Length: 429
Ligand SMILES: Cc1cc2nc3c(=O)[nH]c(=O)nc-3n(C[C@H](O)[C@H](O)[C@H](O)COP(=O)(O)OP(=O)(O)OC[C@H]3O[C@@H](n4cnc5c(N)ncnc54)[C@H](O)[C@@H]3O)c2cc1C
Image 1 (cartoon, rainbow, N blue to C red):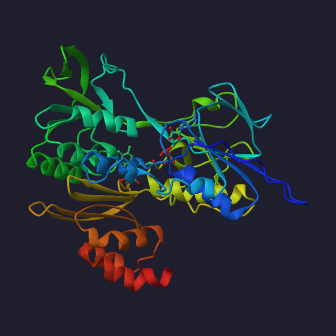
Image 2 (cartoon, rainbow, N blue to C red; image 1 turned 90 degrees about the vertical axis):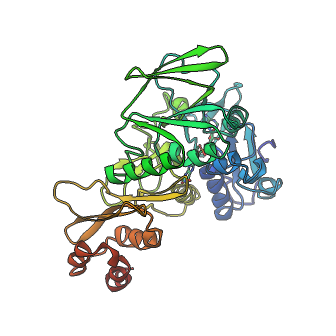
Image 3 (cartoon, helix red, strand yellow; image 1 turned 135 degrees about the horizontal axis):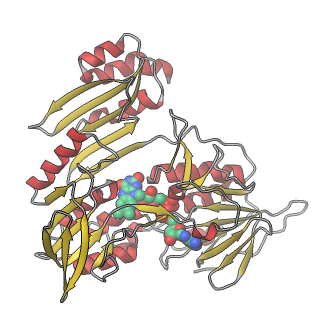
């Protein structure tokens, strides 16, 4: 890893020292945006994993053998960061002092900064289950985790995946591609409960079962006992399963430990305004660690997906460089590929008491469309299949398009989405 570059002293200009904590997609895009916006600035990008900056999104492709590790790297040219005079540092930030404007690293060394971006992402949660720290219990979050999974999940091995949320469903196909006997245990009443309604969650379950995955919903893992080299997993209804490995996919939490005493306000994530600045001037946050204002509702949400991380990072970096940029609101929009079945969730898909809904269901063909209206606007949707409508749905919801007479038409026939967008959305775009 290279050290930070020496400050460049330009005649009459102050050199701003930017420190970026976290070298995932948010950190990398922020560093590159800063360089473009300020050719003189000193930019240091710190990450605590001993890997070149990489994308977690690519891990399923690595596990299914479609790419090698270099395929996960965010920038393929080894000299990329040096060429941009971005210093890459492999170290862990242990503390941030917002008064002295310093960061203390785990080895005790201290870095001074003028502006800092916290892009430290999240880490997998460890539910308080006896046996959760046994070596055969694995997460699927880092490249190091992927190496462990590749060693443990082989044809014929027995694997239990705990959790069927967004990440749990994304990794199913790549786990299944390694040929194990796979069982999924989800404590919610359906799969992907925080993204999809009962109909869609049930459809995904049926799809997975048809592909040979055993699914238990509404059940919890209660204890994990070592049994020689294997594990005996006890569920809350008394069922026991002997497995070779357990994949923990029960969720993640933002990495904020090093902020203790810094004055940076944290709720579920780091609270930011629309410029991505935190409660402390000069300290910004972006990506999985940030809790930003949600588009359409004004609520604060951690929207832990890569496109959002990158957009937040771009906005943060422009403001750090002295320009003015604002995030129009983080738009909750997830597209999920579960073993080849594509589902999507938009905005306020769960609706509310005052909302009207339109629904189209084709169980046999695994197609489902549910639209949620508030007044004359579409505010959310769930889909399975219907990939042809994803762009239009996003446009209608994010564009807050007034549907007028098209609302009644959509209630009668949800398939008229493209026509509604052409009639009403383009005028608003
Ligand atoms: C298996 C998998 C599949 C996924 N698939 C998708 C997908 O299909 N679509 C999608 O949109 N999203 C997907 N995601 C989520 C996506 O990867 C994240 O939203 C994205 O990585 C967030 O980027 P980030 O830069 O905020 O955080 P991260 O990528 O987590 O990067 C943060 C970095 O900061 C480092 N760090 C943390 N604390 C410190 C510290 N104190 N000092 C120094 N460094 C620190 C971390 O180790 C990490 O390297 C997937 C995630 C996983 C695990």
